[in-house]
Length: 453
Ligand SMILES: *Cc1c(COP(=O)(O)O)cnc(C)c1O
Image (cartoon, rainbow, N blue to C red):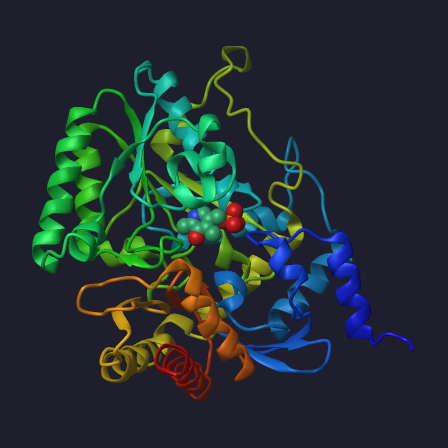
């Protein structure tokens, strides 16, 4: 008997692959979903089954799949050149994209340094900050501060500032020490404070700790408004504003990692806008190409950039780069994506959908007996499930409740991915109202089926 195409691919996957963030023993015992193509906001597997892409293919898709304008931009660039280096040469889409990024970024960010992923955008930011202070003669400023449970990517520097015990404990000895600040979520959720007191406590802690270390810190790095991978830990916008001001007051650089929150996710182009903040360094990736290709950018102010200027022999140069830095295909599709943001009034048209989502979450999900907390900024949503809602007692890890919910949702044609027992909703920004309604319906049914079934 000949194997079906699906069976063949499954066999090859099990034989040759090692998937990211995946327990491969479990993976090899399950039937994987193998995606063949995309249609708008749907993923289609090799057997033709369709799934609504409820987490934007890991938080990066913006306009849906096979978007005609993006496909065209990519093909046109392919007809010119797929790649040429950015080291000692320049190219058209890289130049044009930099201008556009500076135009839409919080005002004051004037220089664009490209790389390939969120993690590298963060590494670049850390290295720029570190070198900046050395060049300025403040050589004691070598430390970094970050938020508890921050996630900044999986390279060594990014892991250091974003340490997560579960993900990174095997690599701890590689990591540099970092000053950790508790964000408001820790006070509100884990210490059961009111929103107001939690915010005050978090700001007070930041003030004290940062002032204490003000002469040794190069920078504070934070995910503004929403710590995504932590399980959607949200912050009020004033917290971001406060961090920015405390940094300024103490001469510490403020780096915002908008890898997840950038490009419309929170309902504005960048989360920093909601707080009226311009960071010293801004990290972008995920949504930058509309979710098409790996590309990242680290933006800085002219003040930081100019510290690196000098004669070659002074060696002030930022000696950092990657082979595919500023890949032209990535830049071309990123440009086309930004054009769609303008033409399609994407952010404006999200607003009623954000309200709709908020309304339904409040009305239908909050009363559910095992929904303990809901956190939302725009199209970033975390629904926290708990065994006991009042005492906030988590489910035993072995129960894998979050995992069960998403498997149930898959059966109902919706692709989502949990973070522990927090169910994440991160739809493409252009999702239609009907599609959004079915994302919410299915999530509701799956949570009910698994937690009450
Ligand atoms: C995803 C993510 C990263 C890492 O991006 P990669 O492209 O996966 O390296 C960094 N920071 C934040 C906030 C993220 O959500």
